[in-house]
Amino acid sequence: MELVRNLCNDVQVLKSIWFGKITGSSHKERLESFYGPQAHVYDHFRARFLHGRIGMLRACAREMHKLQGRKDLVWVDLGGGTGQNVETMASICDLSLFKKVYVVDICGPLCDVAREKVAKYGWTNVEVVEADVCDYEPEASPATLVTFSYSLSMIPPFLNALDKASRYLDPAVGILGVSDFFTSLKHDKTERQHGYLTRWFWRSIFDLDNIDLGPERRQYMDYKFETVYEENHLGYIPYVPILQVPYYIWLGRPKQ
Image 1 (cartoon, rainbow, N blue to C red):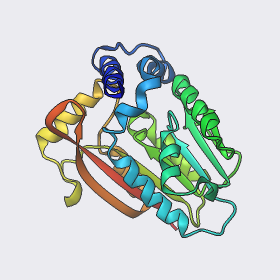
Image 2 (image 1 turned 90 degrees about the horizontal axis):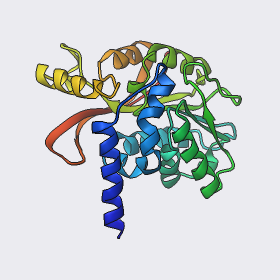
Image 3 (image 1 turned 180 degrees about the horizontal axis):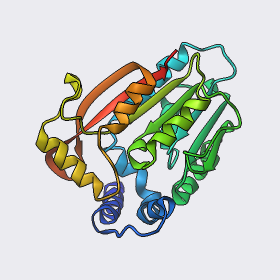
Image 4 (image 1 turned 120 degrees about the vertical axis):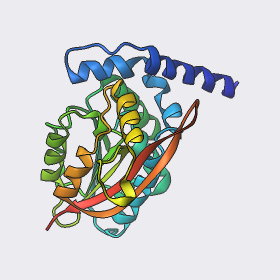
């Protein structure tokens, strides 16, 4: 029965992705029209799709453990959706490591699922905030850790989002962690380089769902932050044979 239920849930997600009509005049309205119908079955499908999330959170946890003993660690998860990043991090390290965890997302239906998880697991230090990450600033600051897990590519004003995050990221010990899909520049670092067809195909495919895989986000992070850790890989998409989409794991800190 579990297998049948999971298949039915996957069908619902795929229906939203392939046939759902994205409507709305604002970014928030468009996201809610896309994610609303699939919010309650979102996590199971994405767990087999967002390959870099666990690796990114593990890398972030390693950096946070270097600060173990401090009582003021704050984690801000931007575009945190259903709170799955927090649930995953809880399997990697003790969430009590953080004085406060903020899950910030502009999409109401995803925030509702996140609030259900907070209540279910009794996370007393986790707060779900429905807000635009370009405007949001945590009450408890500076932040020791800021993450974008497969959300930065979905934020059109990504410069504003990164600039805002950098303002409340601890300049001494703060870590920015990002995992996402991407395509390279025409002439990029060797470890990131893609050919023309890869760049054109994946950027065009994801653009249909208002997801921008262009290299500009990584360019700006390289400019604004010092790289701490980086991985670049290919990953399969559920029910899509042969094809593998490029994704990355990246950690950085404010340049001194």
